[in-house]
Image 1 (cartoon, rainbow, N blue to C red):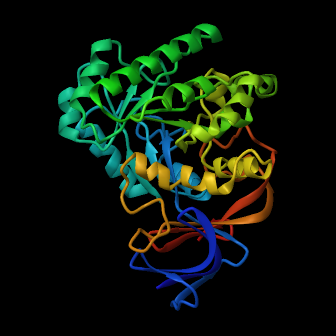
Image 2: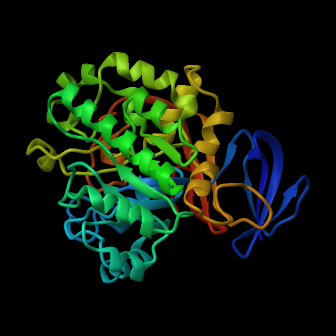
Image 3: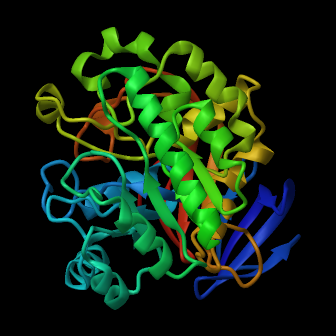
Length: 395
């Protein structure tokens, strides 16, 4: 039995000094002076539920020169994530039961964290959605990386009607016109239309990678809609584009400094934090590819937001764990609680470090946050009761 001793543990909605006992991959006791056969001294550490990321692109199959299930899941663990949810817009999109099963098999063979999968909806794959019976569906309502996009407005409503109402449909609502006024106008109209349909059919929808206050304001008007924000929209703006050059291209695009500040001010209404980890090689980026890697910097960035006084850890931790599990119906994860799976992330809150891209686990080996100093780093990660990462490295 694994015993985590003397840590500052996030339980419920607060931090408390407790021990945690895990047996056969399950949390069996939480208390003081517990006994175990294997021990971790978590004194001075923050002990968190294993983090859950609802939005990653691990690129396999089809673009494994950018990332694969091994490197992407190692990046997840190094960033404190024990579960990630992979998007369907691969080179060959995940839009059939056969392709979903292929991805699941590959991940089972290679991944060191749990990988769940969003299924892609098209204008004509309604039967495949029914056959695959996925826990979530992703609909692309605007152009993005890959060819997966709905072109028929009627398809959106048909998916809304056919997909089980208790399961979330994730929406990519962003338009990628280079003109920001057109870009945002189309995005807001798409979000409003989707929310109207969700209310009509009383079904759950989730807005991916909101990058402006207005998207959040629209989402919170409906009890059927949840919304996520990626950390790069909170810490980067168009002011960074000259420095980043082609490395700064991302979908949705970085917004103005004013919009970035407004996004922070509306963050209290956000349902969860998602990385939108979208790795590309440096050569890909120089050729115009859009997307940032984010799994290894997400928690550090958000803890920086806590240190700056923008948010509180008591608000943050559920947004990266329990709340994600709730939105996506992930059972027995996201909380440190008796009977739950023993996924634990232990953070050293005093560890000062800089992003060194040569040390990243992601295959792409670059970051828009290269050289930035952070305080607070993942020290140990326990996956299903087994130590997979300890003292800042894989065991």
